[in-house]
Every structure is written in structure tokens, then in C-alpha cells.
Amino acid sequence: MAKYSEEFKMKLVTEYLYGNLGYKSLSKKYNIPSSTPLKNWVRSYKTQGMDGLKRRKMQEGYSVQFKLDTIQFILETGASYQETADQFRLNNPSLIYRWMKTFNERGIEGLKPISKGRPSMSKKPTKSKNKEETKLTREEELERENELLRLENAYLKKLKAFRENPNAFHEKHRQKWHSNSKKKDSD
Image (cartoon, rainbow, N blue to C red):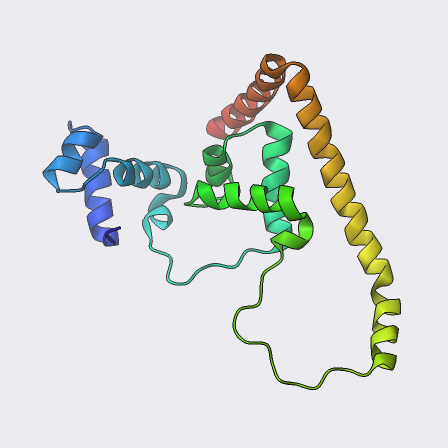
């Protein structure tokens, strides 16, 4: 995939917003193979301004709590991945899809960052230290397990409600989502 400069992206977004050419025409004019990047740039610019067009220098690491917040937002509101990405100022809705998939497969533990590279060669702690550490972290483990079970329970309730009556479920959440977005627009 070609990388485009911020200036180039801004030029095309401005030309789209204030000109009379559509996505496909602008894409052809500037030899972009697909109009999808242009659509994404315009959407990002509308929701985030210039920050939406900036290229991320490094891969951002998101906290487990941030990931859980985005997942919970989807479950509670019925918002799409795109709407959730806009709400949380993310440029990549597929990232949220991966978080959701990982959460469904492995729970909260799957959302924790994975250390990369070779493990250190340090000496392993003695068994007496290990026993003390497990006694200290037992309460934390139980709290994590409780949180996972709460989230799983909420997810299963939503899934059950959806399966029983998909149209009513979507309509209810769509109305809630639209009323919230109208409030934000009027601010």
C-alpha cells in the first residue's frame, strides 16, 4: 500500500470538500488505485481534523482498560466498528474488530500486551518467593476473573436479546446512538 504525505492527503480532502469532484474522480485524477483511502481521509478529517490525517510514527500501544472501554461501548450502544473508531478517535476500525475477536476468544487476558523478543536469561526465582507472590496476587486474580465474568455475562445477555428479536434490538440501540450523536452535534 502506498504511503501518502499529510500535505497530499490535505490537498485531496480540501479538493473533495470544496470542489465539485467525487471520490472516484479525484482518485483517478491523482492516480490512486482505489477511492477507499480518500473516503477514509475525508471521514478522519471530519471527525479528528488535521490529527486524523497524520501518519502514526510508531505503533501505539493501547491500555487494556481502553480496549475494554471500546468493546463495552459497542456492546452497550450497538454502534458499528466505524462509529466506535470515530468516537474513540481511532483511524483503524479493524483494530477494534481484532480486540473484540480476541476478547471473545481469550477474555481480558487476550487484550494484555504481549512481550516481544527473546525472554531474558535471568535466574528463575526460588519456589519460596513464588509461593509468597501467589498469595499476594490471589485477590487480584479473583478481581480480574470477576471482571471477566461480568463482561462475559453482559455480552451473553446482549447476544440472547439480539437472537430473540434482532430488529427490535438494533432499533433500540440505533435510536440511543442517534440521539447521543445529535446531542454532540448541537454542542
